Image 1: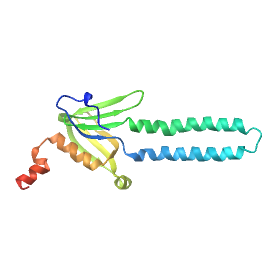
Image 2 (image 1 turned 60 degrees about the horizontal axis):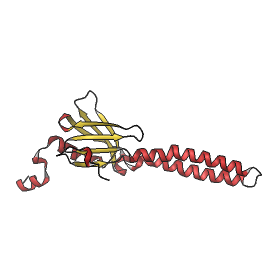
Image 3 (image 1 turned 90 degrees about the vertical axis):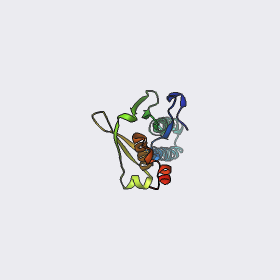
Image 4 (image 1 turned 180 degrees about the vertical axis):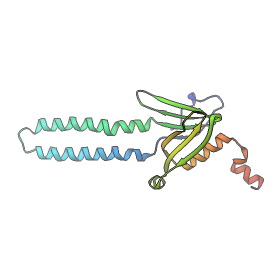
Length: 173
């Protein structure tokens, strides 16, 4: 899904638009399986009893609350979190009911680096660290293809045509 063009400046274009890596959905999906499996098991245990209907209703309500809280909410949070690099700025937007965001102009970014451990390298994600004119570096976790995003962001910050692969090929670099 493209970032809405109405939120961009007249000569601003999206370079990268990412949601957090899908690995942050592993635990919510496991919770879903445990709730459904555990609820089904407990419902089967209560089936031969005379009071099975109130137990089933209680299990269904408890299961629905757990699924909404621990599976649906993280899924919606993942879907509504955006990491966007444009030709003019770096934007991060997150939240469902209460939205928050940060915009960093490209001219204010001093350095960009990334890090990822073994599991992150296997899954193809990592943490992007952006140092700007602010006091502390900003860390963005679970960025998919973090090395590619790092390279693209670096190129946008430097905006040097010699970093362009086509230029390098034409000039014989």
